[in-house]
Image 1 (cartoon, rainbow, N blue to C red):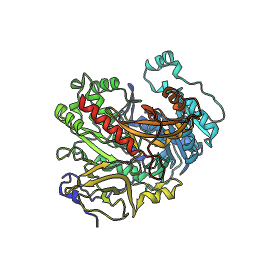
Image 2: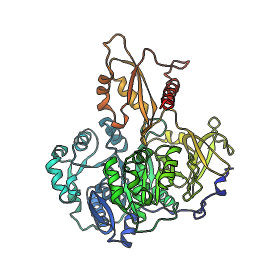
Image 3: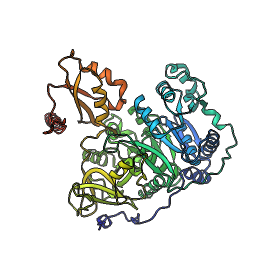
Image 4: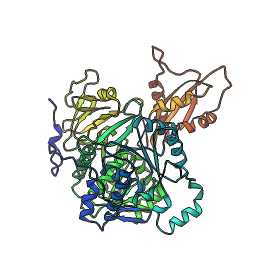
Length: 564
């Protein structure tokens, strides 16, 4: 029997055992637009869109996508940074039963190609930016993607930024080939917006295929239904007691292609009728200006963002204290950082925990008092959590004992796309095995003691050593390599590669090896250090071992901290 010790101190305004009704994701746009059509929904670099305008664009894009052949289950990819195009396309696809496949702009071509082929993506949406279009155009030519919808980035900018971008950033604009695959994004709005009605089963129909390595490093598509995502948003919406419909301002720094931002920033922002201030990517100076200028009331970020803002020389004057709710996720929040914000700014950061397979949030620390720094808090309403023995699968451990954190709830995925074997590995009696080691105390607070031994969290992004190791091993001078995560004060962790070179081939330098692997991996996956060694640690059976290297780097880091 599963204990529910969190009920002792659960927030008074939240009923833990309540049930939630799943809905199609497009209702987020329609319900809010019908209530406040003239309220600002999106603000992108100074250009704004009302909820009524957003609803109109979604409906027209949905009809155009139907005419392009999108129907229930059709996979449509979004290869976009944070911009209005992402939101319009996402909800247009959702409205007609299509499945969104999010593609990270950080991915290498080989990673994009794998995901396109594995997901059966038929249509892709991107921008005419040199950092995106040429790479995706090559992927389209080598996969089953049949249409590439291309938007002009400058058209999303206000006057005169749209003119200045074309004049002074012309090198950032790609030359677009208007062939049989090409579709002009603007053409999606040349209709009356009257779509052919589609019946969506929110519990069964897959709204998003969100790719993740889980804890194995092998990319897999987590099948997230409309209900998974809608209910997770609802679980979060009722967690803070102070939100007011139609009055909140959300800072959208986190990338929408990441499940954390999709649910916590975008979906939740739309549900509460907020004005979502969209930023293409997090840049410290731009973030400081935005927080100073705008009345931001809802802020979500990874710990590295909070660290950067707190360390800025103008941190005391940018209005951090006016934020109603600040949520941190993607990586463990350092206790010192939580204390700094509480003591210096009077802002209680709410730490959330989850994973892609859970849409993603399963736990959150209580708001308005009772938080225990270092804990991930309580299971969200409708979510059951327990600690399972790591050796005897299925054995639930009592309070205080250490094991694998498991969760059961309506936000847990339906499984991995085309991977019944992988699904069976992480699901047990309807509960999700997180792969994280932790414990629960007598009051239901959960603590993460150790994450998967190989997974590296770089600023909230999952980085898998295997991807980097395979790229390094492609070099003919490399005999062996192993990659670990090393501590980093800003990013939390960064990859470090240890390499043994072949003695029969001329040696190479670290810079030469870095240049070799650079096009093979994403920017966030690049090692911060490459160290050559004559021998690498191995287990008794001859397998490369990481634990000795992890211990070495931890000792070096702690020694350096002690001398500062």
